Length: 436
Image 1 (cartoon, rainbow, N blue to C red):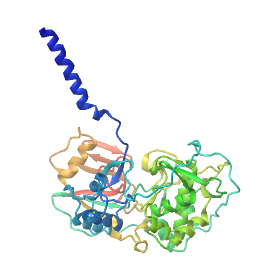
Image 2 (image 1 turned 135 degrees about the vertical axis):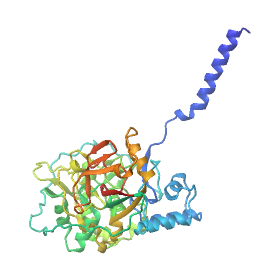
Image 3 (image 1 turned 180 degrees about the vertical axis):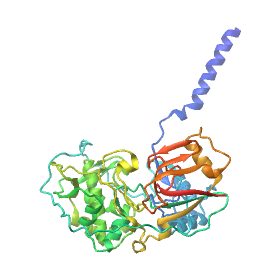
Image 4 (image 1 turned 180 degrees about the horizontal axis):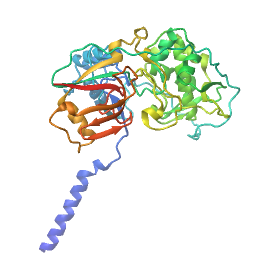
């Protein structure tokens, strides 16, 4: 065999081996979604249920999927122990702080697997919002919403760590639209759901319409609309057992988004998460009564002749004031302006003040890494005190703390609330400083 033929065969064999080695990596990968470190039940906040899952996992009583292990392994040592469960529980009650790291998990990650109904033969509807006029709307009057006086929040007393950055952050979530803890607080003050919705979605009308759609497509299966609403409302604010008016307000907000999506939901984040805690949502009498009371009601914008469902965005807790979509994300679609909601941290709705207002410590290395992750060409001086400067904020919490509108990191300047949260905080309402 000639030398040229040997070389040709050798090259061919190398190509074949290369394809065999790398072919598995070329296969389609499963879609992924984000989970918060420690949030084992995917409720997008830390609670005792997360700690319980971690503890069961540590003693072998929970299905140990690789994603669940990564979410519960908060000390990141590769295993889930009782210590991880303890850390999650302390963080849930505000005695310890997790920095809210986001982990990529499989799209079908499900900490509470249940036997979902089989998909039924349903035509795929249009994903465009319906423009069919509804029945005569119920328009809440303007006078039943009691006035709320504003105020400044209290800055916590603490001793900063020398040689590190201190961050004071307020609230939890994107803070656009209705806040769930605020709705629960107003419920306890005697407000009904119409007043709560009129307060957070000012310039809207409440439409009473027949439930002409009995099923809703949600992430692969069709569900009864009423059952899905019960599971979604519980998945969002199920911990408030006696706040029936807040349940009603949440149900209307979710149903509005469900209707806006023509009862065809392919992204859980676009509407709501669904609870898998079967025994808990089935036995919550306040929840069932609330959903039945408002079934079919949704929100539309004032002046819309077709009464099309509005974009009823909501979140967990504000930073003292809620935001509009333009403020938070730089886009439209949600025209309502921000409203005062400093009472989100009231302990009467099971939110310790220390969980509403958090004092976090970041090392110099952590802040440097976060800045360079945003732009690795950033130039930082030898003095960490010069690295971060808040140029403008909304003063939503008090004169020192607000949603950061403009921020300088080293030699780079960033504008827009959605871009200035460089540390991945749970809420973009914060202040930061370095202590030498």
